[in-house]
Length: 116
Length: 108
Image 1 (cartoon, one colour):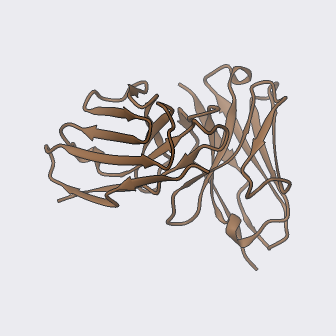
Image 2 (cartoon, rainbow over the protein chains, first blue to last red):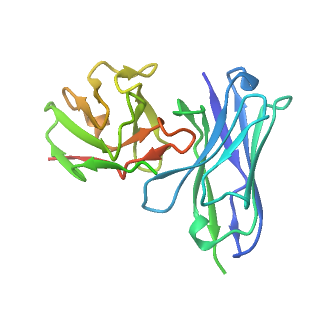
Image 3 (cartoon, chains in turn red, orange):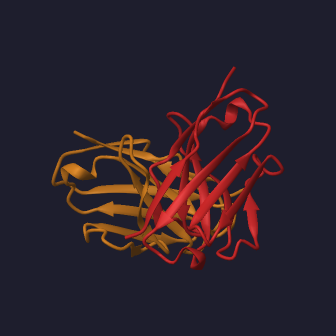
């Protein structure tokens, strides 16, 4: 049974940086694309970024392009999201999700709050 | 960007009744559509992909239909554990997969 566990969420000031991590288990991590999806408080779901199984190809939503960087370490079954120049509108629960197009397993999420 | 519009925003249904949720795309997404269920304080769970294929472990009372711009999620006989928010997501315009705003299914 696939399991995804996010960590790294915190309260950060506008303009600050944060790195989220996602530990994966229960499946062959390197065989699957992985994604980050976020949900602002009381709002719907928003796709953020996707990375191929090898890590060689990455994709970003326009709202985070240039500011966020997705990466993975297949030797440690881990997914990352480096977030720079954070804005108030980045405040959300960030979910790690297995999949490239649709997402068949999700972590429990980690809360990022951007506020002064 | 493809805009996904779900209706109604809230659906009040009695346990045991049938629930029908709609999702409309602003342009054709073929059959590249998924449905998710989210309960309060929990992560979303994949129910349907390819517009009509149930994900692993999803009960048979959940069914999806449609193609192009009009899609439907049907829950044939609502159980207590089915009261939740349901989201559709298109992935035809990949990687920019967009979600609908959600339909809340509440107890009548």
